[in-house]
Length: 193
Image (cartoon, rainbow, N blue to C red; front, side, top):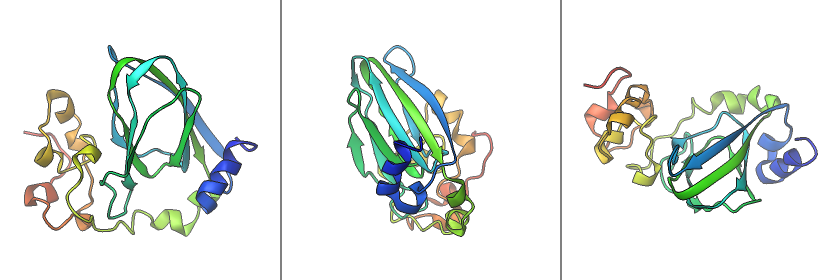
């Protein structure tokens, strides 16, 4: 972590990647006959390294959107195609999701790196207090059925996605875009009818 990952993170992300004090590493696997993808989310990391360990697969890329709290948080930024042996490195606050796999199996090593000095800083503390008003309606590629209060305005809920809707919090009430429907603006956590 200290000899390889941290110097790369410092070059890419400055203060946030300047030092690492801990990490949480785990494996993910996507299969066409199992977990095919992962909903839009952010990571509980300061800097994430996502290493593709491969196997043969089609699809299962990553869709990246904006930074949490930024006006473009739910706007499409880019699509990343995994290649065996390569890593994608991003801030944990970058909204992203694993696209559904078409065929085969993809395995990745995920390394969440934590910088306690950054997490103790005023910048970290204020990041959610400084949540900016969204620039406009979300890009449908950036919607999260788990996190977005207005998901149902743009996509129909399925039985599976509706089980998660009561947890929705995004965007916070003060950060709603101007045309966000009133019912989505006032949505509270709780069971869906």
